[in-house]
Amino acid sequence: MQNISDFKKSDSQKKYVTDCFSSEIVLEPFFLLIKPKIEFYKNSISLAYVERQIENLMKEGFLNIEISWANNENWFNYVSNLKLKYPKLNLGSASIINKKSIDESIRIGLNYSMMKVWNKDLLDYSNSKKHLLIPGIKNLKDLEEAIDLNCKIIKIYPVKDKDELINISKYKNVDFIAAGGLSISDLPLYKSLGYKAIVIGDKGFKNDKIDGRIHKFLKETSN
Image: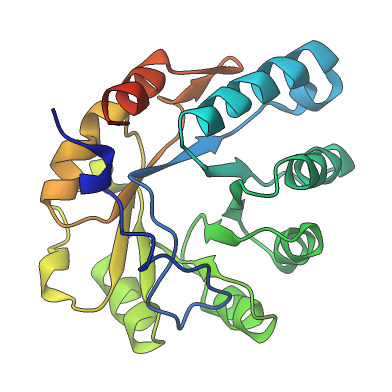
């Protein structure tokens, strides 16, 4: 049975970073992307239920969770409360599309954010704020531009929609993350292709419930 340490960097190698020019980030095997519907934030039962599930993941040793950014006060309050209650959680924001989403992520004190699509101006803004914004890349042209700007952590999204996978092996000193339509069962394939981690979205969190296969994976790889 494969040990979770085979997927992780050693503790001595781990380091939280604050800008896109650093070569290191805390990389667990995967990031769990939580994309709640707007009504979720007003449902106290759903809020408590998801929080219990997050607590269970943390007990199993998993910390990488990102919440899809939403342009409403309820998102800000909810993520702020999570950050305060679980300071050890490697909490980030996803689907970043504008300066407001970056500013709110910084105000909360999030460890990182991920772009939805490539936006050089947004990257420049985030860098000026010393906040880690991981680019979302769809094509080789944007990938080359991101690398020219010294980005060391790059998300390929949506990785499954491509006729031909980008050959990431030719790019040295860059940590790649695969995203888009992936589940926990896709982890071995993308690790074998050289990706440092994957993002699990709808196939990991749906209808306010975290996929039970994730818990199974964490339990099987904990020893």
